[in-house]
Length: 227
Image (cartoon, rainbow, N blue to C red; front, side, top):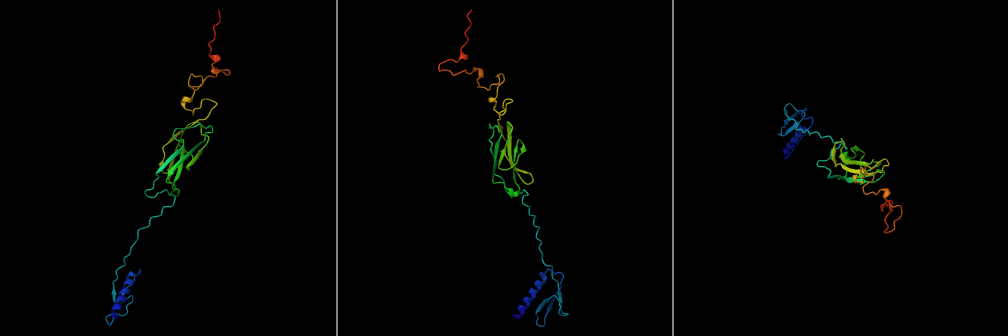
């Protein structure tokens, strides 16, 4: 029983010495005592000690950990995408009869914008970026046709998703000529004397109130002179 315990302790010492980081640089000696007990030590107790060759310990080198991408670099999680990006206002071909030229642009995006990934919303008016955000107030737009488009871009400027171009119209009154913002049927036609279709000339209006059943004066044909 005692011999078995000594052998177990000896083997434990051998394993500890072999597993140590400096095992390859140290020597291990094996001795057998008078009672037949085998002992291992890193120092030879006498000339009868026999050096034991200890194999190098098994080592494991883990692969390098990939560098964590900083927040805002624009890399979305795998499978991430925007389900919906649309311009809620203005509507396609909508007419704004506002002499101030003010128009409100509203953009809807689902899921919400991932600002933590560096994503941002851009709104282009007539092809020129005019700021971001789901609501954009445009002021003093000139009369005529305009376009608006929205897009989501990442931190590198790469376009992740964009809407179709939406066209709308602004009608503003001008004292210098016909309003080019009005539909064609509301414009004065050539040869009409500057009148919009359906408009009655000022000279054809009654000079005063007309009694029911009375024929306006300008509608009575002139009486030819008596020869």
